[in-house]
Length: 116
Image (cartoon, rainbow, N blue to C red; front, side):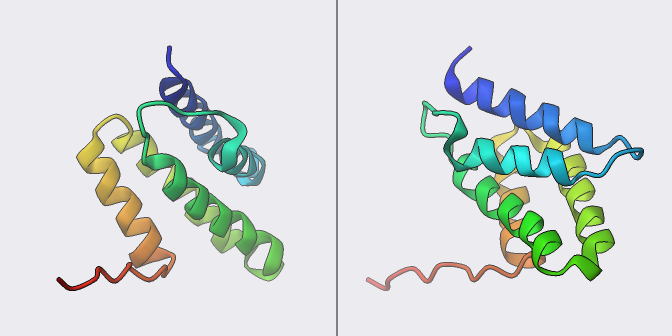
């Protein structure tokens, strides 16, 4: 198993753990952030790495910086995890997932492409 596959398997395992309604999704979310922030080297230019770091960083920061909104943030974590498990492995679906979470849900600005 290459680094990219190991990374994806680790992310999926943590995402699946978040679906257990008896535990807080915060710790598995932090683990995904750690993996995506360089805890595991990648090969094959896996583009999900950078976007997942932004998504899970934003979701965990939400809990840390606005504790009164923890329930709302954790609901988003579970939704993001469930959706990732649905799209993981389908690069086109992953791209749509990453774009939607980054720009439509979390409000990151889309990069402005230079005009030629």
